[in-house]
Length: 361
Image 1 (cartoon, helix red, strand yellow):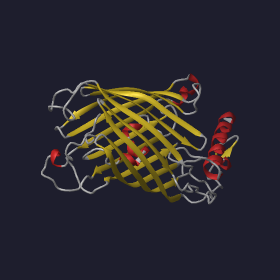
Image 2 (cartoon, rainbow, N blue to C red; image 1 turned 180 degrees about the vertical axis):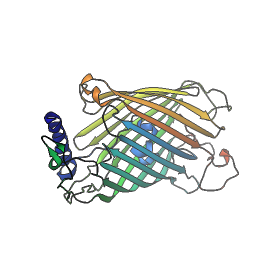
Image 3 (cartoon, rainbow, N blue to C red; image 1 turned 90 degrees about the vertical axis):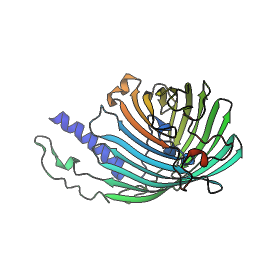
Image 4 (cartoon, rainbow, N blue to C red; image 1 turned 45 degrees about the vertical axis):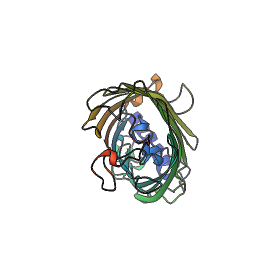
């Protein structure tokens, strides 16, 4: 009993120190197992990059070897607009993240506009922004404090520690990003950069200053078509061959560095891929592999659903106790949806002889 109480006391003390009292603690943004399944989360310039509407659902259950529920889910939707000169599109974003036993829950709701600058027939720039409202809620109903513990009888009753600050805090959050997209022969590429938490908002519950540090994101990915096709699927129901999608993403937030590099493959209507992630630029620290499998389900030549599952696991045995991370992604692409009414087909919305308008992967 004494040993268990000591362990519990250490855990509770660390929790209280880090999350409640420290004004200098640094939070780190969520890193998805498959980052390009939630592109507008990393860079709002992806909003309206291709024609139509994109709706994305992601659910990630982290560190299943630990007690408690570490989960994140998000929903985003964006619609391209080509009828207003210079417009890219408009998007909405929702994310909720739960830490531990639900002690801290963070909910984000954001609006994402973008603008589009076509440099040439096969090159373009997009710039996007996110304006969001964030709510962080603290719930200590299930927490156990040191004043509740007795060395003989264990948990003996209510804690005298009641003044832990506000249970909920709101703040505004802003991000901006840009990207460059090009098409060269059978290769389509995107290179981008974004900065999040531009105003370093205060996320403290206690009145102490706890700024959320700026998160810088750099990314690039390339889609290599190994066979020629016409449109997204060519003739509906027929294979368009294989496509390779290598890429990387790098995040810098305060003293934390995270990079992910890997490749996804589209073979007919099946997706699979492997990614390597490191959070310290050190092979021996916080390295993990992510494996993905998925399916592309075409409803029509303009509408499709993509369902993907990702399994993320720490490489080194000393970190294996946290357990694997699971991510499920559902993506709906409706190429014929627009803010404005058209003749009812995709070609009526497309600018004449303009590439870079269809989803390439």
